[in-house]
Length: 337
Image 1 (cartoon, rainbow, N blue to C red):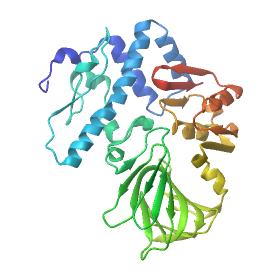
Image 2 (image 1 turned 60 degrees about the vertical axis):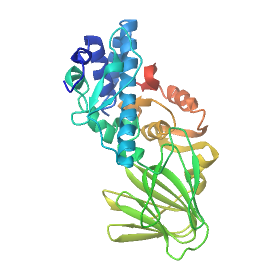
Image 3 (image 1 turned 180 degrees about the vertical axis):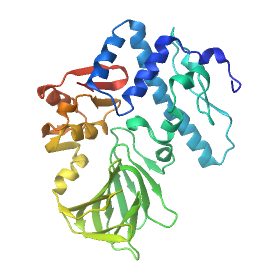
Image 4 (image 1 turned 135 degrees about the horizontal axis):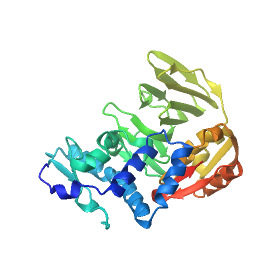
């Protein structure tokens, strides 16, 4: 059992079921029926609710293990065989003693209940915690945080929530995840370059916004001029122009309102006739936990409004008016059914 006491790897049925519920919720396949079933399951007893809270905590604790791996790797330290998670104990399961093996990541009964959690440290489900690549960034913001960084040669960046940047050995930066506004104040000898996924943005004197998420990369020119490149193709952008690229290639420029794109700099989220599914994805960037839309009939309903990023409960109130049932669960999880 990899050198630890196997009695702690034996989950009681309620704790095992709680872990299975968290895995289901983070699979991206949760349905209205799942939401209703989970409500009934948590209502069975206080122990059921406690077990679910601790299961969410176990998943969140994976970020601690991932951070330890990243720090040891960056320091060039030889790694031990085990990363140990430390969480408050309950009557049902002593989470303080869960040992996570680097090769299999979880052993014994815990592995059976939480299969796939090792992969989740590298690619977290639904972004519930930073990936290993994000933890290895030179600059990073947490959920709801913003940060300004001054770089060499008169270049500054403003980082939005859950953003990770790495400095490139050849100059410029790599956007690992999230969103940043880049200001190249003067024309350097060579263009300042931001790489993101399999493309890059070059600018000599400009201000632009670049965002990278699961759907791809989106670049918006605010001032000056920028060039966006991917797979041998390039597109030039002027102020108020935007282009996206991803697995489908480099798109065509479109005209946008830069004030809407950069509203996050003023602490605002501006929604103009946006589908609810997209709105939920956006709100999830700024709040801890996760909002899960488990009602397919509501996904395309349109939402309008201006919301403060530090008061996003207004979005939940708006969703209620669309006919959704809102259920708050432990761990900051909200189900919309």
